[in-house]
Length: 236
Length: 236
Image (spheres, rainbow over the protein chains, first blue to last red):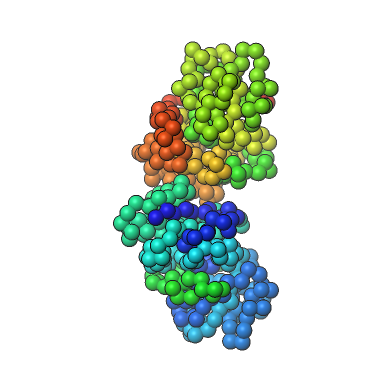
């Protein structure tokens, strides 16, 4: 299995996803929130690139969620904190979600044969699903402000580690993948610290969102792997 | 001291180097060759972006060196293998050098207050010089084929590790720098293996250039730090 890792959404061209399984990672916080919402029983998450598009996609009964500048959008039901997406709130509902980088990354990968979303919360389940899909893999780290974000690279390394363990064969990785696997293996016992000390982690701390970092740092607490089905992210 | 790391020459905009000390890294092989040439007594190395520019810059007595597609350029005196740049060949001579990526990276950084070249061969000396120059630092990994190359990231991590040790204070790194430091610390006892197994390493092996990889993998065998002075790289 060949695996390539892209360092930020800025670096992603649609052509790289052809005939591949794409794994989208935005640990802080889009994919963590999407996974939490689906695990809590949301019917689906609909990624929207803009606030206007999100409003246009909303049908009666749908929840509107998302952020701009890390904050909830005016008039939206929910922000981008995983903790908001509880069973009581989202079970049986569709969620339209727009975030600065994560939803943009999902749209970038739409030409892939399969699009999965991963975070620290479901890395092993995502690796397992990717192996079952029998395609080469492109992991897209969403990043932040058009730059590499360490929490996404760390998660890419975690997924690579799981792909390696589960497949039982050598992965053919590109150089950036090799570097991210080394990053993860060097920091595997310091997941939360690494995320907290990254640029986005520091920004969230300043905004009083420490709890969000905690909610995004627990390894493999979910088995769900949200997968793109048309325009909807649903349980794989 | 703030330190940023840029993953490939493609990612580098001139503006990022303003008021900074730039450290250019192209382990396989441009900066390793430049350092070897200066250590062997070359008067200076003149980086040229194109073959035509290299020929135009050549004055009587100058050596012409460089590569395209990893091979020596027709009519040039020298290729891009460090081993060719011996004292017998280069002592007291000027060398005009053009390579696919490395010399392009040097030109990208020309707006920096200071431009230094680093490789595995002189990482500690380069870190020491950068600290003496009392500017924030931007490390530019040249990369290969417009992509991140693991040997350059590994060397960036090595330089960061030395900056950290020598300065004795915490560095303010960006997320990519933090990742490269982790990469280096995870692989610090496997430098040659990591370089050999990277994309460029494999390409050189196929071309029968194993000796070049060895010549570029020895940690801190040189104290020279080639530094840009006008258009010339000279002993700092």
